[in-house]
Image (cartoon, rainbow over all chains, first blue to last red; front, side, top):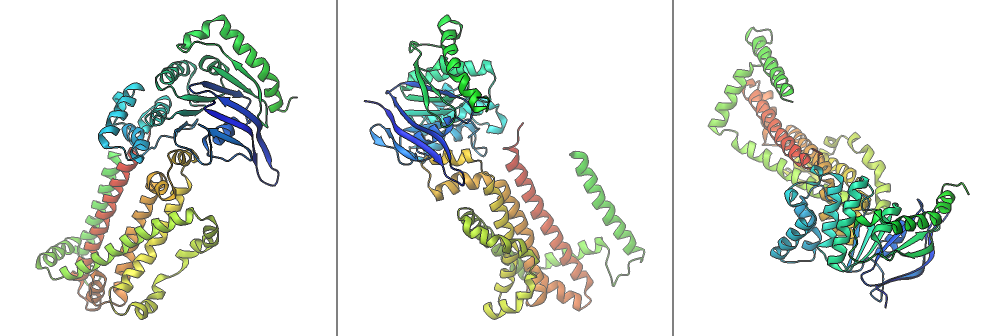
Length: 258
Length: 250
C-alpha cells in the first residue's frame, strides 16, 4: 500500500496559449521513503509539488495521500519552499510556533515542542531574534522547524537549500537525513542539485523537459543511516553520472538546443 | 543621525529666535503677530485657567473618533477590495481622483444629514483620512510574497485568518503609513470644519479670537495645535521606526 500515489496526473496552465507543464505522470511513494526529483529548469518540478500538496489541482488524474484523494491541502502534509517563507514580524520562536498555535495546542505544549525544534535545528541562541537578523540558511532552518513541529507524515521540500553554498548544503543535507530518520516521515525533495538528490534519496526521479514526466526512477541503494560522507564513494560518482546522462539531453532540450 | 537631529533642532531654535526678535523690534507689528514667548505665556495661562478645556476635549474627541473610524473602515475596505479584484478595478479611477474633491464643499450637505452637531466635523475628518488608509492598506497587501500566502494555505488558514495572521501583519508598515496620514488628515478635517460652522472646538475658538482681534488667544491656540500635532506625529514616527527595525537586516 503506497503512502502517496499519483495516477495519470497532468497540469495545464490555462490562457491564450495553454502551457502543458506536467505529465501525464504516475508515481507511488512508500511510507517513510525519501524521494528526490531532479530535472531541467521549467520541467514542472515545482508544479508537481504544488499538485501533491493540494495547492494546485491537477488538470487530469488524481493524487492520493494515505488512500484519500487530495482536494485542497490535506492534514499531515508539510511544505518547505525554496523562497524565504519566514514571517518577518515574528521571532524565531513565534515563527516556529505559528502552525502549532493555529491547531489550538496548549501554550505549554507549544513551548515544549518549539523548544525541542529550536534545539534540534541549532537555533537556540536565536530564539528571540527576528528573521532579518538571521542568515539565509538559518531562516530556512526556521521554516523547516515550523514544518517539523506539526509532525507531518509527508514533507514536501522545494529546493530548500537553493540559496546556500555547497558546504552548508551538505551539512543541511545531513540534518535533513537526521530528521527524516527521527520522524519517519515520507519526504519528497525537489532539487536542481544532482549530488543532493543522489546523496539524500532512496530513489531519484529524473524528469524530462516540459511537460515534466519521469524518464526513470533510480533506486540509490543507500542504507538508512547514511550521511554526506557517501559523496566520496565510487558508487556515488557512478550514480550521479547516470543521473546526468539521463538529464543532459533534457537540459539541452529545455535550453532549446535540441 | 545625531547630527541631523541637532541641525533640525538648531533650525527650529533659529527660526523661533528670529521671529521673537522681529516681533520685539516691531518689524512685525503686534496686531499681525505676537512674539513666540508671548504665545507660550498666553498658552500656559489659558491651559492653567481651564478656559478652553471643553473646546480642547471636544476637538480631541472628534479627531479621535474620525481617526479610529478611518483606521477600522480603511483597513476593512482595503482588505476586502484586495480580495475582490473586480470591485477594485471598478473603483481604482475613483480612488485616483478622490483627493481632487474639496471635501469642505460637502459641509452643507453634511449639516443637512447630521444636523448642527459634532458629526459633520467628524465626517469631514473621516472622509479626508479614510482614503489614505485604504490606499496604503492595498499597497501593503499587494506586496505580500506569494510564498507566504502558500504557507498560509498549507497551515489551513481561511480568508479571514489569512488576512489577520499573514496579510495584514506583513502589510503593517504600509498600513501604519496610512495611519500616520489618517491622523494628520483627521486633525486637518476636524479643525478645518470647526472653523466653518461650529460652536465649540479649537478651530472655532481660533476663528472666534481672529474675528475679535484677540491675538494672544488665537496664537496660543495655534501653538497648542502645532505642539499637539508635532508630538503625535513624532510619537507615531518613533513607533514606526521600532516596528521597522525588527524587519530590517542587521
